[in-house]
Length: 437
Image (spheres, rainbow, N blue to C red):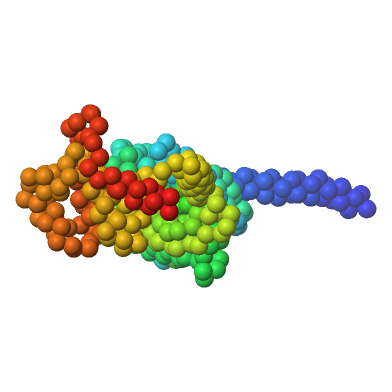
């Protein structure tokens, strides 16, 4: 009985020791196999590479890539593991002076690749860069948050960093400059739409102009701002908020800028909305291209209010002039009510009534007053005057002839200041009778 008891008492410490050995071995094995993300990268359990432009081949000594100013530069970041990803990958932000960075797609492209007899899982990210000036650029290390499966099946996560990447940019053409707005793309479509509130326009109606610019491999904020809301005396412009979109579909980068402006007509008549023009660099054909958006002319009718507003100064001037003429005519009529009628008015009335003999009498009186002559032929020696006088003495009844002779006589200066005795005393009676009439 004593022997049996000793064996049982000795077995308990052995079991405790064995249990401690097992726990220690598990701890040691766990410690040995546990790795961080940098250990996995050193042991090729995870790979990270980044490039701009074309993907470099293994062992290639690549030159610094060159691009055009405003050209779309694609930064590609690729993470790979021979096992699998246990969580989403996160790309840090990129900040560079004179460069616009845009990550259009928030999801990575996942694919597999056979390499060295293993199947590698890969995640590829693309970030578009748009350099705004010429010169040399360096993309700083980009933080990439990774979660992958370790060889022992554990999840390992951490942050890796890409290597700095250099590239340079140049101005693509001498026709372009930093002072003139332009952008770079591989293809551009432009659409212009017009819409009026009514078919027959009048003051107060509206005209809507919409311009849509779609560019491939560009950025919406780089597309030209055309409708700037400039107003004139003929219309008031009300620009609407711009709509900017940037999309990516299977490597196809598309940017769209839609501008819309409403023009409210302020004056009647013709109004012309202006042309717009912009330039862009075709990075595919390596050429500068110019796009012209034609304006349009519209005709609008006046309302009573707009007519008065537009021609107010003319209306007031006309009314003032009419008032002055009316007052003057009334004053003249009152003045001559008790006075003899002017000779020129009597002469023109006689011509209008075709009272030729009396008109000749008035003409002769004016000849005597201005020249002291009694015969028409002696008033002037010119050949034209002699012909006119001969025509009148021969009895030609012509208002045009008599008016021309009247004007000629009016230009003659009276040579004598003294009073000439009346040669035709009956002439004054005839003139006085005509004046009273």
